[in-house]
Length: 315
Ligand code: BT5
Image 1 (cartoon, protein in one colour):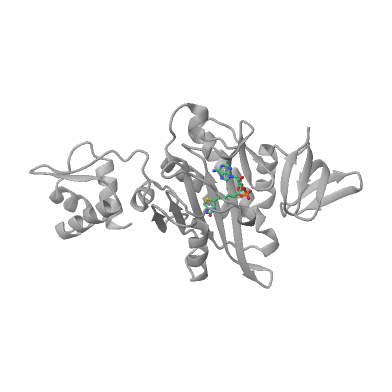
Image 2 (cartoon, rainbow, N blue to C red):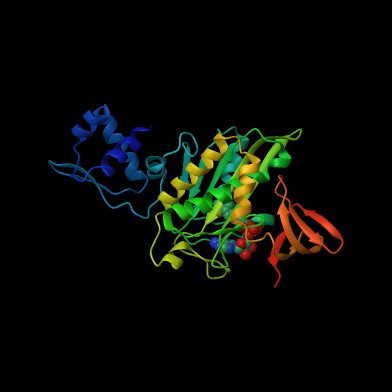
C-alpha cells in the first residue's frame, strides 16, 4: 500500500491529532516519508492541518472522492487496487480504453467526479453534475470468448443492484440490456467496451454511471438520495460494488449463476416489449435471456434473438 494511503488510514482511524513522529513510528516510516505522504494527500485536495505541538488532523472527508480515499476504503483483494482519479475528465471509459491499450493491468479503476464527455451506447450523452455521483470504469482481462463479453455487463449490473441494496435497502431492478431502474426511472447505466483477437477477449472496459446524490433534470432519471431523503456515501457504495464484482470474477464469471441472479432482478422478462435494434422494431413477449445475454422475444412470427437495442415496455 502506498505511504500516503497508510497515513490517510491512520488519520481516518484516529480521533486525535497524530504527530509526525507518532505516524512515522506506527507506520515504520521516516519523518521525511510522512511529510511527503501528507503533501501528496494535500495535493489530492484533502485538508490536513498541522497543529503546533500536537500533530496532524484531517478535516471531514464525507462525500469526497479521491485516489487515496478510494484506496483506503477498498476491501477487495485486487479489483480497483490501481486507481486513477480525476476531478474532471472527458470520459472515464475513454481514459480506461487508452490505459488498457497500453497494457494496464486487470482490475485498474478509473474514476472521476465529473465528465465533460460522458458517454452511453451509440455515443449518447451520459450527464452527471460534478461531485455527486459515481462515474467510473474498470479494466478487466478475464479469460472469455468475445461473444461472451455481455456477461461482464450482467455481472456489473447485478453487483451494482446488490451494493445499492446492502447500503440502502432499496431494490433496483435491471432492464435489458444495461440499465438499473428504480421507481420506474433510470438509476444507472453500464457501458462495456471490448477489444480482442481471434474470438478471444484481450481487454474489456466496464463503465458505470450511477446516480447517487443527484440526477440530471433533463433525463427520466432518479438518484438514491432523492428516494431516501438523505445523501449516500459514494465510497461505501463503490467499495460494496467492487467486492461483489470481484467475487464473480474470482469465480470465473459463472454464466448460469450470473444469469440466474440477473433474471431474478429483471424487469423485462415476462413483459410485452418493443425493441429497436437499429434496423427494425421487434415486438413481442420477452421470454428469457440466453447465456450470451441476448434477449429472446416471442413474436407473432416466432422466437427472435435480439443481441442489442433499446427496449421499451408495452402496456
Ligand atoms: C448507458 O448508455 O446507460 C451507459 C452509461 C454509462 C456511463 C458511464 S459513466 C462512466 C463511464 N464513462 C463514460 O463515458 N461512460 C461510462 P445508454 O443505455 O445508451 O443510455 C444513455 C441514455 O441515458 C442517454 O441517451 C440519456 O437519455 C440517458 N441518461 C444520460 N444521463 C443519465 C443519467 N445520469 N441518469 C439516467 N439517464 C441518463
